[in-house]
Length: 297
Image (spheres, helix red, strand yellow):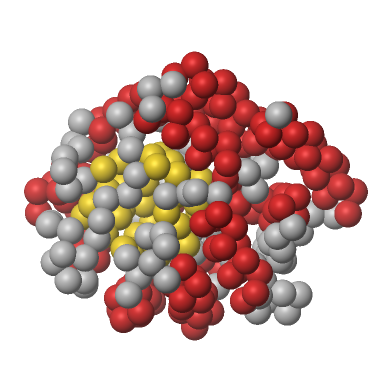
């Protein structure tokens, strides 16, 4: 499996007591299918994965997998601060038939390059040789960085690392990653405001938290790009930037609040995150409705 196009990094809706709202999660999966996204990225940063316990993450993965039933590929984030939980979540992902796994780099504690490389090699070995593994590099939050030399060594020493999600606006690094592309390895950006630019550089797609609210902007942009309609793609990129600005480029409480413009229930957030107050929510929705009208017009 090689991921391309727009991959929606979906939220995990919770009820007021912190339990997963199964109906809301299923509705979100149906919504993303209807909007034509190319894949689902579950329980990552936008999905508040590391704020949940292992049993809750397992249940969410089961619901997502069951609801989609092969309609879209699912990449499940298994990253955690505790390595033993990563292995447990990885085994569960394989057991329920998730299409691929990904893990953020070790975080909080600063690790050496060799330790970082060993982590991903062990992750690769904990799944079948033909099972897709995606690296998730978000150096702005992890305190650790999968540099180009580390990535090159990982590709040489493993067979099932199929791609990398890079959540950064560092275009020089992205270009280095793109230089390592092959038939088995691709590069996905996590930077919505630069989606068109990164496609032009050779990036294969976008993992977008903002696609919980307005996936159509990113889907239309990608479709215009692959059809060679660059003027249309550039026009849509301005709308994509507006979406990212309104949602503060992936702010989870704002994204969850904004989902209601589509009749979706984003649910509550996990502490220490805080839900939007009524006034901020109303202001956001008014702005999103105006932008949605411009996009659809």
